[in-house]
Length: 336
Image (cartoon, rainbow, N blue to C red):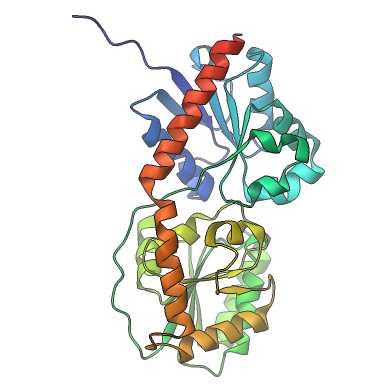
């Protein structure tokens, strides 16, 4: 009986591994699962390492942080086989200021962005290398929710990029609205912001900081909230947005490219980045429309329901497998 040919060997470089419990790690792990029938795949934090000699392709997440691994790959492989997956920090900061991140862009054969406005952040001469792969998540049923109050949940570690100060200020503006409750999940990555969260809880009975939570528990809270608040200053394509959309939980989000590129230019739930009064006013409108079939909350729910199919696992898996096939083809053409 003839043997099947060995699977090609692929390495995924992710600066964040399981302990970080962040979007980069979840993307790396999910893509590893998607590619399991197509390639022998492992996730590492830097390359080369013990198994590097047999690698035929690399997917590297984060241009700046994976830049040494990208450079090492190109030194070992003259052309082909290399894709760079770009985060929000890459697209909206590092590639405009950091020499290592800029070099990594030019070394990659493919530049993967995770939302539809991502290519516009790239240098014009590199946009032809870009491809959009929307991330995915499992669908959750929409659960019945109380009409006695509105629960708005923000999910994001306490760091500047997530703009938690916007939520803190909105909580203070809504302190008299005991029918609007704000919950906040995220680790205290910045002690200054952690202190501000504690102070906001002391001043505002409507705000609760829940600290870091396991992913499964976070998804349950998203599922049971009336709204997800996403106030980020920059994003490459936030997991939490698609997790809300695919759980029947509408989103209100800062009007930045990373959010617009996932939710669409016509989405009705945006507020200006950093605009706490605007966020508070939108929450008040959502609360006032609870139970209405044609109010803003129902409109957001309908828009999110239409968007959910874009984040289907089968679509992401097909796109990732095509990326691998293209990389293996470029590696075979280029040789070492």
